[in-house]
Amino acid sequence: NWLQQSNIKGRVNQFGLLQRFGPGSDEQRTKTTQLFFDISQGSLNFHPQWQSLNQVDAKLLVDDTLTSAQISSAKLGQAELRDADLKIGGYPKGEAKNSLLNLSGEINSTLAGVIDVLANSSLSGQFGVLGDWEYSGDIEADMDLVIPLSKISSIQPLTQYNVSSRLFKAGVAIPSTPIKLEQLYGELNFSNQRGLYSSLIGGQFWDEPLQIEFFKQAG
Image 1 (cartoon, helix red, strand yellow):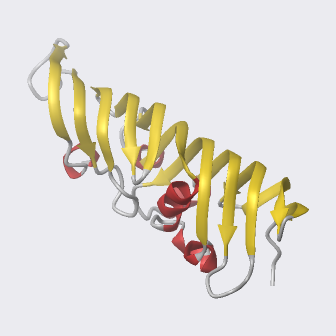
Image 2: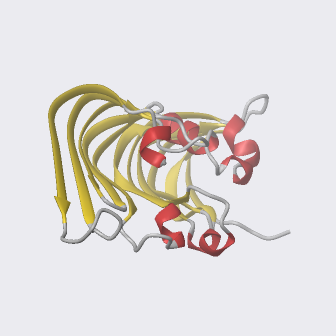
């Protein structure tokens, strides 16, 4: 299952186990199991196509079909993740939605760090040459991911990748060209439906004021 494949490591500050058994014979008896871990300085491979979470401080609860974690802080690639929630399952046994991983939280990072996380994930095919550009400056972001853990066709339409970010004195340069954008500020967002987009980003280009709109165009 996911918990075994995620290869959780770290210091366990607290551990709890609770099992409840209902009436009846061994074959018919109902049973529930709960596991609790308080982890610090841990690591978690939450999905094979995403970089692992490292330096994890979290509380992890396994309650039958539901696995959830409250992550105080962690590193996702070069990005710092804070006040994050992770959830898998919680639906009746056999329900396809149990194969969805939900991860949401706040990110503090450099712009290069966030781009690196997204470009080295299951979203890499949507980035094209953007992953090869050079980035600088800082970013604050809110991340909300719904990631399939299996190839079950019924859950693929439920996939969601949403990152809403705010730029602070950021920069973007295209290698081997004179194109270099500086002092960028504003909102820069990403979703699996719209790609990289923004209604307005301000900045400078060759020391002149600049306003940019990002959007995805078919064709």
